[in-house]
Image 1 (cartoon, rainbow, N blue to C red):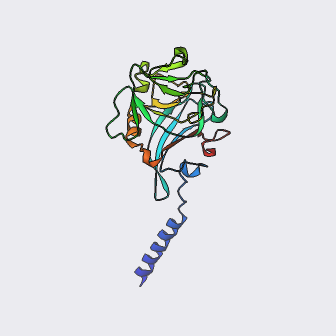
Image 2: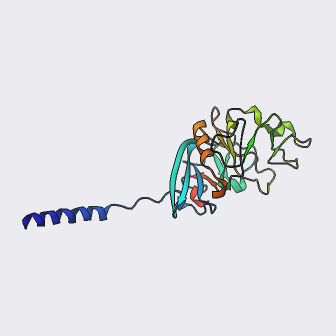
Amino acid sequence: MRRLLVVGSVLLALAGSVAARPAAAPTLPSRLADTGGGTQLITAQAAAAGSTTGTVTWWNLRRGTWVKGGSAPARFGAKGLAEGASRKQGTDTTPTGLYDLPYAFGVGAAPPGTVHPYRRVTNRSWWCEDNAARSYNRWVEPRPADCRAAEAEHLIAYPTQYARALVIGFNYERPVRGRGAGIFLHVNGRGATAGCISVPAAAMDRILDWVDPVRRPHIAIGTRSGPTAITRY
């Protein structure tokens, strides 16, 4: 009888310790104002607006819960991050906000397993950043006469950074001239970017293997707190 009482006391103590265990902290996507309505999300978070480094994490929505798929160290603009709705072109800042991911591209072939739309870069491939051009913030091939070479990126000239990349839909659907063009998630170069987000090459390949247009992927970019906090988007 005494033994049964002891066992019962132990079980009650264990039950009490389980009940007292704090609930798991909500995942980052569950704290966002909007995730785009799909079941895949990339978060790109920096510590503060002036930061040039942070973390990129990709998430899957499973049975109503966001589950982490992987993460990698990230680099941001050389002058940090800026509110996407008021960002100015040429400021070397990464725009914050929630954006879609129209398609991927690269100097090399798409990694095995890639199902996202993928464009192969050739010597004729440019990204037009000329505010006066009709094709502002668009891939052009070849470069049209009204898009000056000095105001465009010759994509093949960046074989390291653009070995693999995802177009971020910042200022893309209805471009506002002067706000910025050519914002991508791409492979790391030598340091901070001119406004893009970059990750190690192996991480970029993993992301392209993971991203699926059927699941309506988006990217949320922001900081831990303050006016550009990622949870605002």
